[in-house]
Amino acid sequence: MAEGLAIAPAIDSLIRHDAVVARADTDVPPASSRNPGFVGVARRALAQQGRLTPGNAANRGWLPRLDDYRHVPALLDLCHALLAGEPVHARRATLPLLRAWKAATDLPDRIATELLAFVAAPTLLTLADSGCLPPFRPESFPLPADVWPVGAAGRHAQAALRWLGWVDGPAAAPQLTTEGRMAVAFSGQFRYPLSYLPMLTRMDSLLFGDPGIALTRSGDATERHLDRAADIRFSTEVFRRNCAPVLSAMAVPLFHRSRGDSRPRVVVDVGCGEATLLASLFHAIASEPAAADAAENLLLVGVENNPVAEQAAKRTLATCGAKHVLIRGDISYPDAIAARLAVEGFDFADALHVNKSVIHDRELVDASPSEAAHAEWYGARAGLPGANADDGIFARPDGSLVDATAAQDDLVRFFRRWRPYLVRHGMIALEPHALTVDAAAALSGRSLTAVMEALHGFSCQYLATLDRFTEAIGVSGLRLAAQRLIGSELTGHVHMSCSHLVAERDSRHGL
Image 1 (cartoon, rainbow, N blue to C red):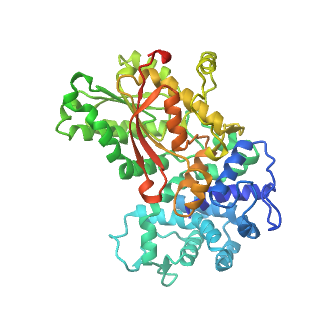
Image 2 (cartoon, rainbow, N blue to C red):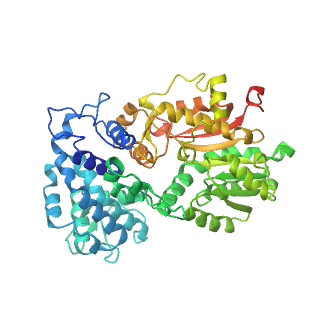
Image 3 (cartoon, one colour):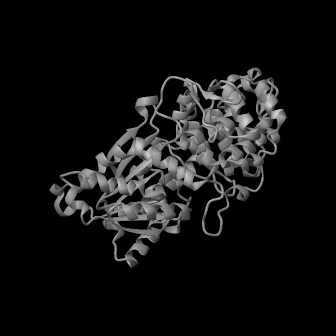
């Protein structure tokens, strides 16, 4: 269902510009666009759903139903209204849309479910966040009137959830079914795609118009394409559920007293978000008998360039009980962060660096003359088999195409810029990974992979497959001191890694 939230607006835009056709006897034509990077991201997302073949031909089963996506603009309006709790905003979600739900049994289940997600997802999240539901029991539960949407939005929400089998009972007193209670319990997965709703609403500009309309930041660096507070909340939930134990197991031993003076005295998180990672690691160190004394004088340094995240980090660090510093900075430019901390009297190279889901959110930085010369002399791609289209399709903010090879080379340069600061304690990076098209297609409907890759791609983020990520580490003069893989036990594919990177002491790299 979450796939519909992330990809249906792109399908609607592709249809409007004749980049997808509704005739089952015609292959999908090449998309003509001023923004080939974003169109490439959209087409890769369709391929990861199994809707386009590697040769860009359409999987014909869904082509006759393209007309159903005409509801997407109205659904986006309704989704905004449900999230805001202001039904008056649902101006375009009128009676014809209600009639569409009554005819929903005529739609293929997958398409109907994806479109209904724009109504079901915000409704379920509202219920989940209200705190009105008691602990789960396998029985229907009456919905309190004060949390159920009213007016036109409420009628749409009830019609959608009834079609899905999540609500029953009289219209005046709807009840959640057992399946509905389960859906509410898992509704947190919708928080991620819904956080990108501002960008999804402007998908036509992103693919075929001025992408700045969808992506431009305000004067204080606040993003306009994303509800950063909602994104931070989702990221925090993922960290606490899946990542915190893995990170602690890898990092806390570095602070054991048996390491003596080699223990880190500073921990830096660049792109710290609300600083949950820093606070969690500090408490893990403090609660470990063999490392607790290290927490007494440990300095936590949060680095952020987003004002919403910065304010959240201030609140977290102020209450975590550790000495701390919070500064502005971008992970793409470690030298600038080092200079800023030097002014404060701290050595950036004498820190343990940690981060979660930030490396792929770096800015693409063109090779400097010295980097170009270094690459030519030593071979920038020495030891790399060469990235290909199956490793990803990306875009710059202006919509231009970034192929997988260019993204891979940029990742190598990124690690090389960081290498001087990773000699003593290294960097522990929690990083999500892309999947190949075939691997993602096999998981379609059972994983957030296609959702994550599409939304990252549309917002100019550069996910790497695990293989390419690991290769870039080695080529850049770093080595893996440890690595844990996350997600493979559930799906058979790695969705995230926790990697401890340290710099090789190698004269070739100037260390």
